[in-house]
Length: 196
Image 1: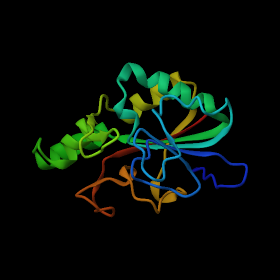
Image 2 (image 1 turned 180 degrees about the horizontal axis):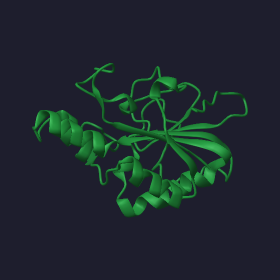
Image 3 (image 1 turned 90 degrees about the vertical axis):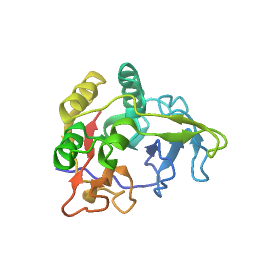
Image 4 (image 1 turned 120 degrees about the vertical axis):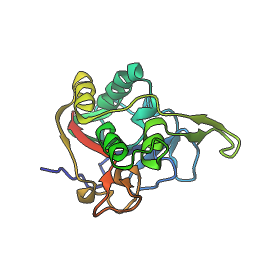
């Protein structure tokens, strides 16, 4: 059963690695200082938040920018700030779906393969001239579940982006091949939620 969390005066919802995407009711954290970013910071360091104070963490296509050996530390930090019983909602490129795209198109240069596998995102003070970061790891459901369990999460399951409070804000959790074919395309995002 999908768990929805709504905003109230006592609710803290974090949008980690938000990039250009703004979702009302969330605190936005990103390395780039877009106008809606509340904390320009590495999402692996949430020291601006106390233990057990956050009601929801949403992160879409951010965790893959960390090396595989860094992922556990990042997830433990996210776990630290969540209140017991509260939710991490995560989206990462889905390796199993990327393989399906390759099997269908037999083209390694297809946008549904190289982009999700390797990524490329600008960061820095001048985004036009800044540095770039690339994907450093990839997940399927089982590998994602293993790292979440290791970081202390439980009740790990897939979620349907259409049934979330952020469904109206298009991001990579809604990435399909062919692009924007949300009815018949291959969803190339692995959307997983877990409870502290």
